[in-house]
Image (cartoon, rainbow over all chains, first blue to last red; front, side, top):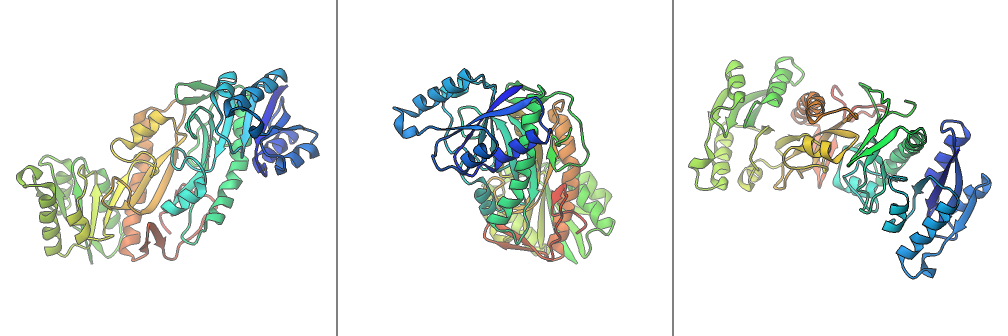
Length: 217
Length: 217
């Protein structure tokens, strides 16, 4: 049973999508062992309680530095035997001590077809640019801003009468598909990082697709 | 009958896709009136001859500046009554005099999901980055490098065993679909530029898609 820790700051809808994928059996041989939040009132905490998952709030303001904050997280997660960290709307840049403690074992989701529109408000950036395809990306976390090796990406159309909200909602539906799938690929041992590239074992190929790779493969 | 001029530097496979779309009747009420190349031996010239299209070679080296080169092109195209300029593998950055003479009347295709990977070798940049979705974009030309308002974009999957060549080939197939479609939308008067955004009149919406908007709409 592979132990997962989720880091979140807010609502945690992607956290919920992973809980659901485990409870439905889509992701097997894994469990969310704990949630860590940097905000005391994160709604993600309510989700954790509802599903019997330990939740811990750590206030970055009580640490000497952000490095110290992440050293503490690394120690707690190592102590518990965590093998995978999933960032779900965690609004902090992960620092080197945690990355070094969990090399290629931290996942993030970003609401854009990276490397377009990294950083805050990817959906708004895409809307303002006037793209015709927006989307989302699951990637391993490195020390850059949304720059780590890409695991899975999805694209969604942007229509002439779309708003930032309607695009965000369309993207979010795909976030809730690709994130659990990326976790499943990791748990099943099908991801191998080679330089900047993520090799997917036993990959299926599709002529038509909404995302790559396709969930369910 | 709307007159189109094509500017090319090389093989001109996208030029061919537009010729084919006109000859098949997919694009109606338009004709390619002339080809201008900056290279004497561009294979695009052979394609023009085969289809009875006037071809003109202009050597930028014989002009005092690139501005002068594009002033000459603007004068020639205005003289002939050209209403749309299509760049098809034209390896020069279009300068202000031509852009000002044909505002929102110059199209370009780029082999990446812009704004990712502008400039030379978009496919190679995407491959080296390790994206899981690559693609192509048709956009109006402004003075930046592949920065103008986006008309249509397509995405293709990138698989673990892909090479730069196999990705390029997969993207090219979609280039040959979206470029004629963008020309058709322009010719049919369905494109309106509003700031950075291209509004598509009578746009159809799709739940599933390979590109947006979908050719044939």
